[in-house]
Image 1 (cartoon, rainbow, N blue to C red):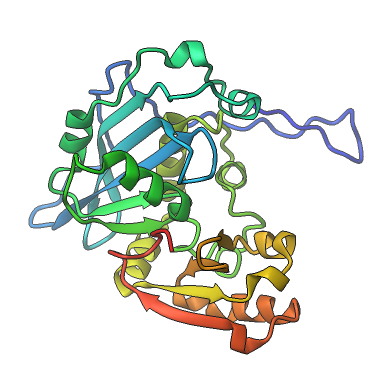
Image 2: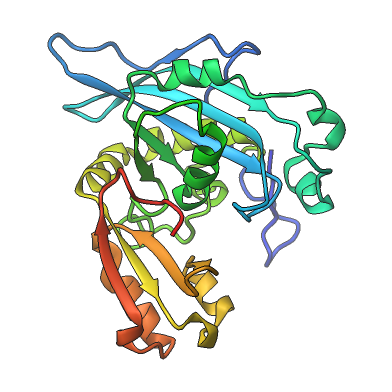
Length: 292
């Protein structure tokens, strides 16, 4: 549990953060129920997905951990009623882990030896659901679809809890990093393990009551902002705006929801990038956050 000291007075300890308010048993079969379904209340379900990988390159890197959490929500009040299923699986990669990944995740080659993904359990959690939520879907969706290729053929809407919620403009949050958002709610957890991250995101959605905003923005669809002629652009500055780079097409791109469009267009303009280099394309939640 984190305990930070005040930078102006190193002797004064900041208030301690709370641990996440729920966890699951070792076999992940026990659910959490927050309130009963009311008579005639319509409900639906979504699945939160998080991955750990050997790196950021979809062409060469591999998934080493996948976690899924299934939740039920009210289609009327958008209250999250229950968390009903969880799966966490490890996977042995084809090459040794880098020191950076070992340090980041705490996973080691020894911990992954012999582990494989139970695709049947993933299928059971996804069955009957058409919405997947991820905190950074631009990263998770390509890796997840590559992992699941040949195992499931259903098409899912993807909602991103970074881009589908107006954290900075609407909620006045300083950072969109999951651990920082949890800190702003008074919680702390061990980040960069997939199982911990799906618990953390569920906690955030419940605490901040933002599931309606995320679902409505996903229903409306997203917009892809692309910047061509990328060889002349500043990689560091565009990464600050969380743009990704597509080497095959030599352009930067980012998926956002419409209320953020002017914010990013202004940011691009401040970097001196000509407007004719910028393209904006609308996409549905079915096609958002795929690789370019």
